[in-house]
Length: 276
Image: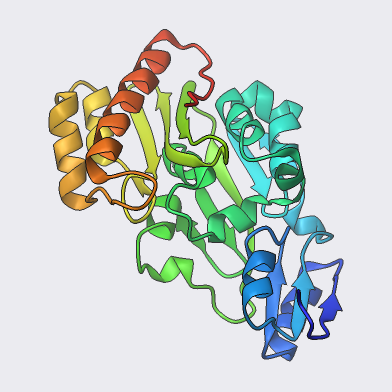
């Protein structure tokens, strides 16, 4: 349990949230708290929490032409149930709707998923596969730079907040997830898009961090074989081993998911998650 008293703030404006973070040296911004609260229960809690759930600039899902904008405070349930997302990018709606349980989806936010250190996060793969751009109060960061290990984009400056993301709506999109039972968390996720003759592929769970798979994009464009593409990926992003799976298993399953994802893109059919 968290025994220390909390100085809790729930600002209704973006500038107020930034001012609070600058005013209190120990202030921590919080969306749904799905990653922060369990961590605080096991260690020292911060003195000041700035909840971002009411900030209008971080809310909402909008489509303008071929561009989608999603606020950082949008929950996974809102992503899954949004008519805009279902009509524009159904693969993202399907992905969000199959993550975790209902309670988690009702609380977890897009901004929190962008800040998580989970190697197998589904949302990072989707942001990479759609070539999304992360917008903060200070800068715009391409998703492949944001998720790059040790890249400065993952460390926000004091008072800097993620406002949301934007992405271009692809002609087709597909995702495949390998989920573990009974926890149902994703061991591997592949999210791919096609716009004209260009492809985007995001992979999480294979290596130490989610990454944009440029070699897989070249394979989808017909420039290489799948095993050659996988070999090139592994040179830059070595497969990891842990208590859930070894590196060889991760490699084999990544190859399988890539092939299934490619088949769905070619068929231009919506693709739901593969669960095991």
